[in-house]
Image 1 (tube, rainbow, N blue to C red):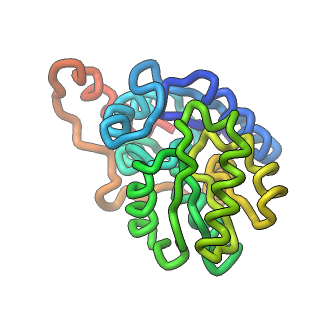
Image 2 (tube, rainbow, N blue to C red):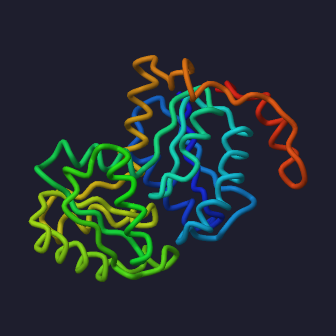
Length: 244
């Protein structure tokens, strides 16, 4: 089995950290291939960043056949489009983390990077039917590319969230926090869910069960059509939808 893990930003160092976490959790016989796009933002910290990360994300999926895919950004950018394009299942780390956390306690707190990203986390909690489990979303106010080295700040934010929200579980709201998960859990004292590893295992389980995204409705392969300008190559990529 091959799982493609795509970091939608262009940071090579962050991609390598994500890859280590993904490979460490994958089961026997599972090959994890972690990549990032050649084009797009260095980090995703705004709606603008998220929108411009999607073409590069889709190009990675189209060029790297796999049995299933993980989108390793907590905004789950391009998730619906990726599900149209890929043959196998596609799981975003926010959805994976929230659904996993809901199995572990009455309610969870999301701790993300910058304050401006909190609204997006709430949007996703509502979209995934997890708003009833999400007791709060808070930020540690550390930029994405600096968060891996700021474990003390993240721990403090998690402790504060658990106390303020009276939550049982913490969801890490950034793929850049993946290497910190075990230490944060040890220091905070509640289960801490990293969406990268949760998503890898969810994709692995779906593939082992022979399940894929339904193509009966809106997630069928997109209808081929010409694209203009810098997006012209993406019209051709539609022809390889169902590539897994």
